[in-house]
Structures are given as structure tokens and as C-alpha cells.
Length: 118
Length: 108
Image (cartoon, rainbow over all chains, first blue to last red; front, top):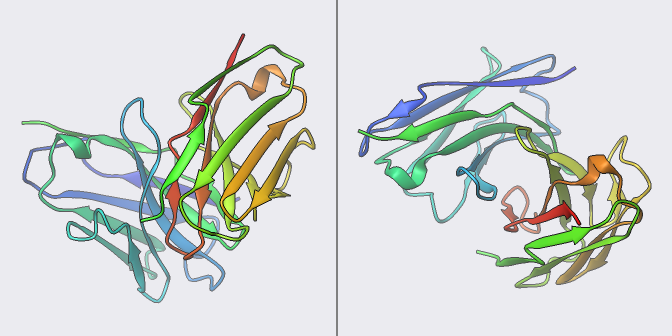
């Protein structure tokens, strides 16, 4: 059974960089059938797609976040990462990592809450 | 960015009744749309992809329809476990995607 687990600091100061890792277990991140996504959800609000990465390293970002976001993959560790630069309170959210195939996002992590505050 | 509009924001339905949720997309996306269910404290769950195909293990009471710019999720007879928030997601320029703002289905 595929599992995804997010990890990283739960508190980040304004203007600093948010960094999260998603560890994939029970399956290979190098599968040619899937992209690996980051999605976030501010408290009490809806879902926002942040971006996707393929095992080859190809990346695709939400245009509204593209200037501040970077996603990378480490196939040797079966994990992928998210960085968001110059964070503000508006970046406070539950951050999910997920697997996306042609038939939708079928596996999600449990989510990790990141609060931006001094 | 493709604009997604879900309506209504909140839908009050009695158990056993039918629920009809709408998702309107700001440009033509063929059938490149999915629906997700999210319960409090849980990650979203894929219900429907390609506008009308049920994901693995999804009960037949969930039906997706539509194409182009207008889409509908119908829950034929609401069960207690169906009260949740539902999101549509377009992926016409896959792997880029956009979510709607969600419809909360609550008990009437």
C-alpha cells in the first residue's frame, strides 16, 4: 500500500523559506505513470494546487506561486521536496503531498500544518 | 489561470435525499475534471475522474456528468457518511490543475 508522509517545521518566520519533504513508501517515485504533487489548504478554506514534479525532475507550478516555489525530487531516497520563499501569513496552511495519475490524485499524505508567524 | 466556480457554497439535504452539486469552468476543458470528497480532519478522496468515471471503490450513488464547461456531481441518496465538502478539479493542461472552492453538503 502506497503511503506518503510530509515532514518539516511547523512554524516559519515571515520572509523566511518554508521547506517540506514528502517521503514515499510502498511504491517507487520513479514510476513513469505518475506525477507527485504539493497541495495546500489554509485553515477553514479550500484546496490550492501548488505544483507537480515528475521523477525525471520536470516541474510544473501554479502560475500564482511560481515565482516563490521550487519542487525537487530525490529518487535515491524516494522522496520529493517543496520550498516556498519569502513566506507571509497567507502561506499558513495544511500542506499535502500526493500522487497524481491520469485518473486523478489517488494517494494523499495526512498533511502537515505550517504556520507563518514571528 | 482557469476559473472554477462551484455552487452552491452550502447544500442542506436530508438523509436519503438527492444532492446535486455544480461546477462551472471558465473555459472549455472537455471531460478533464475530477471530484473529491473531504471530511473534517481527513485528506481529500478521489470520487470521479474524467468527469464521469467512478474511482475504485466509490459507490454507485455517486454520479458525475457534464463536459466542456458545465459539470455536475449527483449523490442519489445521501448516506450519513456523505456529509462532507466536495471539490471539483480541472486538469485540462495536465499536470497543471485548479480546484474549485468547494461545496459543503450538510444535514438538513
